[in-house]
Length: 134
Image (cartoon, one colour):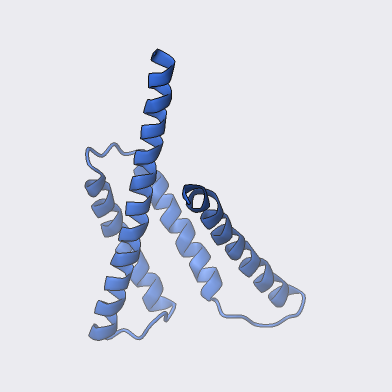
């Protein structure tokens, strides 16, 4: 099960992204078909999110929760801006609350997943070090 989450889940997500982008590229360039700018917006959003995460990776946080809160506070306004200008949903208080809760749930699940992955990797490294020392 661990192998599935470590390897295949991320591979499927990356493959889906590239297949979607290549399909949009061919539809736009070769077939001259207009497509929604949603895929482009998502790619730009993901580049910004990954860049922000890479920058925060170099900051030493004493607690994982601090990293999570800082990244969420920095990424949330970016997410709202993309949602507003990309017309991802109608902006009224009900939708804003609902989509904010969905966003917070998803980012929490992602952070918890990577937190547990890091803990597992640390355990495996410690086991290897202990076996080398004994």
